[in-house]
Length: 378
Image 1 (cartoon, rainbow, N blue to C red):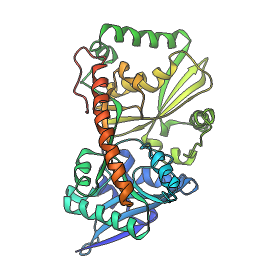
Image 2: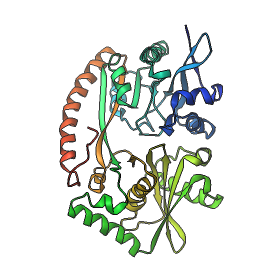
Image 3: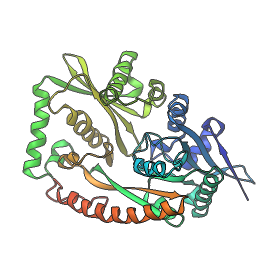
Image 4: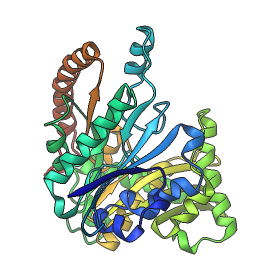
C-alpha cells in the first residue's frame, strides 16, 4: 500500500530520502538545489507555487516516488514557450492561468522529472495520474512536463496526447586529451576560426580564471552577481535568482571570470553535475571581441576535458554554437490541455510543428563542424 501526498516546501521532506530517489547525476533535481529556490526567495514573488508530489510506502514510510511541480500564474522562466497558447485562451475568454508544471525553475536542462524507487514504472504512472487528477480538481487549464528524459517521455506518451520537442546544442567529450585534440577533429576552416577568436581575446589583454563557488570571497560574489544581473538589465528583464540562491549552491557552481588589468570585466556561472557541465548565466561590463565565446564556450570545453566530463550543455538556443563544436540534441516536453477543442487544435499544430522540426534537425546536422561528426542526440 502507498500514501499519496503533496507538500509546499521541501523543508517538510527528508533530504536523504529525496536524494535517494534523485541520485547524484543531475544537480538540478537534487534536494539542495530545489530548496535553494525556496530559501533564496526565487519562487513566490515571481508566480511559482511549489507542489511537491510524493508517494510513501504505508508500511515503512519510505519515500518511493516524487515530482517537483509548481502552480504557475505566468510562463516566465520555463523555456518551453506557450505564450501563444495563453494568448489564444485569453482571446477566447478563457483563463490559461493557473496551470501546473513539472519542471526545474529557470533551468532549461533536461533531467529526471518523475522520481521512482528502482525506476519503477508503476510508481511513475501513479505520479502522473496523481498530478493530472490534482490538476482537474484545482481547475488548472493544463499540465506540463518540461525537459524530460527520453525514458520519462515514453511513460508520459501513454497519458498525454500533446508531445513537443525542440533542440539544444551540446558538446560531447570524445576522450579528448586537450583543447588542441578537440580542434583536430574539426574541419580546417572551423578550427582556424576558433583559434582566431581565442587569439582576439588574448590580444585584448584578457585573462581567464575559473573558481569553484565555495572559493569566492565576498567581493567576487558581488561581481559575479552583478554580471548575472546586468544581462537582465540590458534586456529590461528581471533577475529572479537571488545572491542567497547562488551562495546556497556554491559548491555546485563554476565561476568563470575574465580580467583586464586585474579587474573583472565579465563573468559566467555554470552548474557542475557529476559528468556534465551546464552553462547558465553570463554578463559583462563592456563588449570585447570574442569574449562571450571564450567565457561561455571554450573555457567550459577546456574544463570538461581537464576533469573528464562527458558533456557540456551551454544553455538554451543558439545555432551559432554548432560551428564551435556543439551539436543538436532533442529536448522533450509533454502537455495535457483540459479544454477538448483547444487540445485537438494543439495536437494538430504540434504534429505539423514536429515535421518542420525534423527537417530543421537535418539542416542542423548538415552544418556540423566536425570532419567526422560524433553521434548527435536527434
